[in-house]
Length: 123
Image (cartoon, rainbow, N blue to C red; front, top):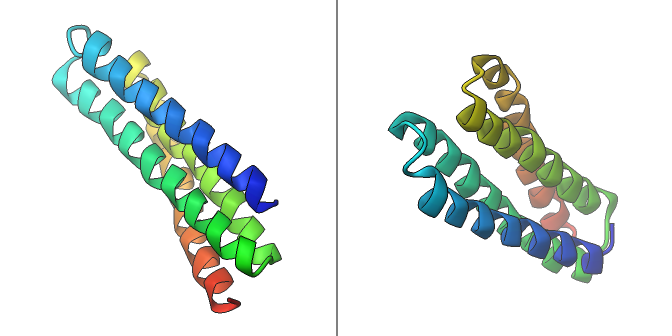
């Protein structure tokens, strides 16, 4: 994945995180139980963290392109979809079965950070 695509995906993910945060604060706050709203906000927070992580990957791979840097991008994206996505769905539906897939997204995030470290070592 090229740095240009990484930055574009980071921008899209950051935009969605801000929009979701505003949606939660202004629309869901009066409609969800406090614990469900907290779950939703956790999804937003981790999505934003990893949008910024994608920017870091773009900076690293712009200087030292590598397959491991590209892998970090894919892992951060997969983690966002699975981790944050499952938390959004859990908060909105209350279906606890979604909680079983959330750790898979967390594992993708962790693997992404390891890949980012490996990519940074190539700089």
